[in-house]
Length: 301
Image (cartoon, rainbow, N blue to C red; front, side):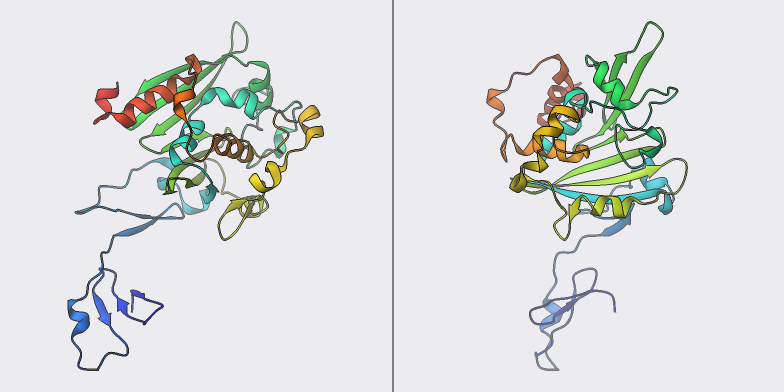
């Protein structure tokens, strides 16, 4: 029988919330006929369970790449952040941060960059992304209005003939699609747990071969069951002053998720935005806030 049996008294409800059994009640009891819980439709897409928390028929599921790809070509994971969901989204859509926050002082062999963001070579070039971000540190950021939210374009001029282009598609209100390498993208959602905590849910999508090795790679970095980063506030995010002097800008290891987590959590659980000094590089965040405050996407255009 498909349904949900509760741990306290063993009552059983079906998938629509209708009570089916009330153990310990008399056999002729009609109590369960008048008991119904609120129920929501649930769907498994991309290795994540999704639900529609509203009345009426759920809208059609978006046909974005991570949902259209075969199961073997996607990998889902999540991580806990101890801050408000909004500031974690704002860091994720900031194209300028990667130049310093994710700066590596030395480049590594791009052939071993599988599953590591900003470590592969850029498309149509042998230049490692670490070098692109480190040496071309004044990106021109363009923000385009779309039906799904925003398209963020970061342009870095390499020379008179070449410009590096990196595109982030923001899916309003709390998701974005970012390039991980020339073969893989990450689609990531930031979902509130409460005012001061959130989870990021990510689906890695491969466009070439089935995804391999990602489970072991991720579990080295995150501790279950909370999916808490092994580098966190309690251990200063793994900060190593020798590494900061010689290897990475933050001194917090090679995983950029740890860099982002330090950045968003160090602002406080709820960032005091009254003390900000926003500049040209913050145009994506400024437009996103306008969209959040507007009643419709067209008003924020």
